[in-house]
Image (cartoon, rainbow, N blue to C red; front, side, top):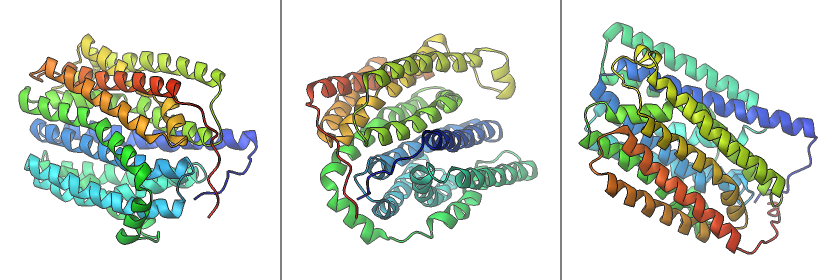
Length: 400
């Protein structure tokens, strides 16, 4: 377990918070860069495959964060134990992604799935340590991004459009990610022991994180199967465009969780967060509205702009996701994992109900409202659970 956090000066906390935002912003820019680049260089059918595969990857990495990084950040697991559990999680993510690639019958993505192990173990280091080592991760990620872009574009210039261009991104990144994560001690057996010892709290969180990504992954798979060629790509690009908003949410989650570990959040903070949710909705709508301008088809030939109904759905989804951070952080810090799990089950059932109503999935707007229904139900369920749950004192975990 981690020791109680030591007091820091206000200026230091502000600087560290900015560092976290910058690290996550660069991570988001990396996602935007790869999706924008592959939207141009990959044949449309192959980009549809990549849209499903990368969304599954992001979902699984997020699942790993729920039972790996989050447990470290809120003070319920030591960083050393977190590293050990991260290696087991990374192996599971790699095997799952390999299964997705096989289902898509895409050999290039099968090779890329192996590199996912390196990325997932590195992602743990970045997410847990960036609060204190932001400049280091900024330099490291920027160098890797530059190499990935140069190699991928260079191969494209030489061989033209090909499904195998994705290797230029993932194969280049793998050894770079392994340099940092490979130095850490641990192993699969040690990681399994950590997860087993933490099973009571991990299982509900694992279920929560697993159900969190199910609506999106299934919706994208359905629109790829039932819609026209390019519909899955259009939906995936909407999430890519919202990358800058998403990264603010990831950064905010880390800071909110860390602050919650020190004590309950004030009413004033909750009010400020309500303003953040409204601004999030407006910002998402503004960004997605760019798809209805001539700029979008000019930048991405062959892509059609989103309908206003789809824009409203995607914006609502992101705003609802931001609103869940406060009650989720409080419930998890108080080890109320069961309430979080129940809320996620209700959310998933809501998404499934709306999904059945929208069948067949043949438009990006169907994806938008399926995931938005889940996020709205999750937010409502968490706030109800928070209001019905007696407050308990959140004591810092004892030192090792």
